[in-house]
View (cartoon, rainbow, N blue to C red):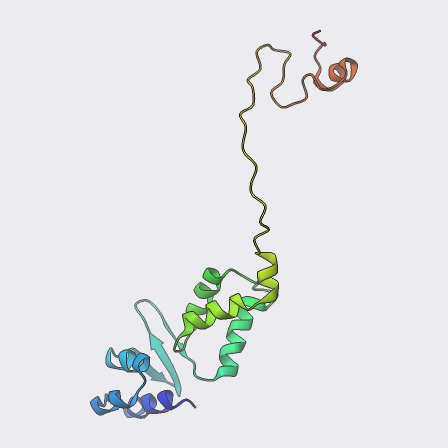
Length: 160
């Protein structure tokens, strides 16, 4: 168990807030503890934000499992960094979690290969000419086909 987690759990188990405890915690944990964001329920430490209450994680292997499930697994499909952040945010919290998710996505080879910049620029869009008579087509089939084939495909006689 992480030092911060252990320190935070002691007063929560006794259902009171210890003001001297705050000085022993790292900055991120200190802020959350002072704001009353931690809750202990059935021996599990939770972190509360505006609209959610999620499990607070300290074990690196569990954090890696969460990252794998929400980014690498078949169900996740190597989501973008933003979408992975949204998924992780719904179930867990740990210190520096946003940076960890960003780093995990940036070091994922499969994601980087699929989303790499090819260096090719998009072509210029050109305006198509409007047809000036009923026989002319604006989608390129009008005059490019031989006359008999045009009659058969487009149902219109050739205009020559």
